[in-house]
Length: 249
Image (cartoon, rainbow, N blue to C red; front, side, top):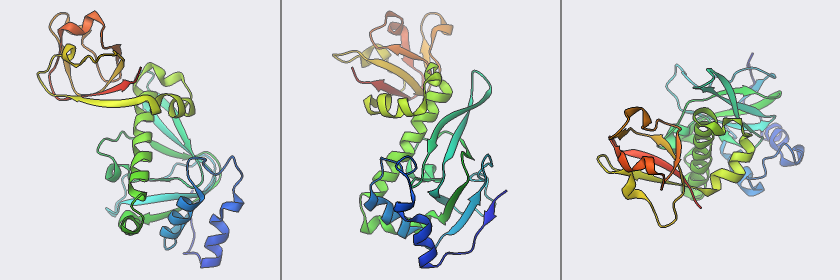
């Protein structure tokens, strides 16, 4: 059950979101104190929501057509995604105090759906994205920062929900695999064999359709992986524009 709190006074707000209230384990290490203070100020006029452990956060299908974003003030939330192979919800990652989510589609041109569940009792502040975006002119680094976090979530959902790497912890993928990734768009009608670089690397099909000139069942699907110099790729052609994730050698 969601508990809605009134708009906080300055004193109440600073008490709730003061970084000194967070332990090292609760305050996400990838966000600096200065960035958190800027976000905290941006959300100051928002509405505080309280969620008990295990409750689902209603971030989708909002009837008011407002693009709401959420700042985690305390507690943790877990992202869940439907595993296409196991047909069950799988944990993708955990977001900690200081993180913003809810408007990935406005920050990143490719998104994958996920559910958000309270992994502990938590307080969030919700704010229309239009109100937060006014900070971007004064703090030019803020939009790229939020875009990078949205991209990170999209890639984690992809690897946890569509690839054999689903069994690996999200934190391991985030810190080990994601920093090694680059992406490439292959135009439609282009042979995949023409995309092999000087140092062939591992590739995942993120989106698009690939056809095989031989056995059609051998054509990869979203989430499938291969090495660029594998013989099977000789007969592969991009039927549509194809997006590949590549792991740098």
